[in-house]
Image (cartoon, rainbow, N blue to C red; front, top):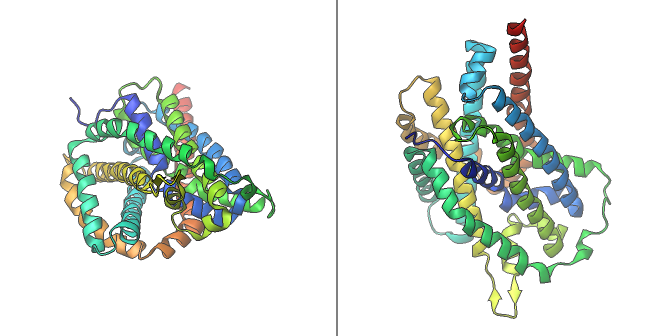
Length: 364
């Protein structure tokens, strides 16, 4: 058996968990800083455009069935240009892995483990993720299937228990700053999960049922986006736009607001568990694609040989690109979406157009 084979159900779950990823914790903070109480509208707009992007990615994947991004970019664009794009693709997800590790360190160090050295937290989490990558994508998919009911249960419980805390007046005035902040916030929201989703162009060939890959990809994105938009909406309804924009982890704060009969209180640990699990799978997927892509570019027989060097390099790079939470917030708000456009829009469009032109020229 191929250790990297996954079922289409596991693929849907992985897409959903990757989409939620780190964004369930910080997306409300980033969005409301730009669009205030209209942040939920920006979330819906970004979610809609994100689904259109996923349609583009799945169309590209169907044009080159059973081939990874690394393979068909060389076939379509030639070896030189294809390898240049492949290198850019691998470096992008390498840096995304470093950003994920930086977020893990920042959150756990500030909220849960303040006396634990940052290096211990980062390397420990990396070792766990690398272990999953070492055993193959199939193991990551099966474990995601096991944890998915727990994540879904915790999410539903959190949303239900927060219903008594909702204050509809927090939504007004709507569009008080005009439509420009909403479009700016929607563009920022696109860069958080949706422009990162071309990562699955390396994973789609390992899915067992290729006939329904487009539906599976769209469904996973639809569900993941629904969770994110619902979280942004709840943060504004419960905390208000001002408090949400001032709190680095507003969805974590939501857990502290839960109070049912002075008995069920302060269950923010549910939010922490959801976030740690979803970011673990996002990091694992990033590491799998980075190591797989590197092994293909370097013509190595196994991707496992690059895993240990990856841990060491990511540990160093993390401290450079994510020195503190403030730097990360500014980077995400102003630079991440523009930096993700080539990966999330430019390269897939190029491959789709050039690939179709080549097929037409061959047919003629």
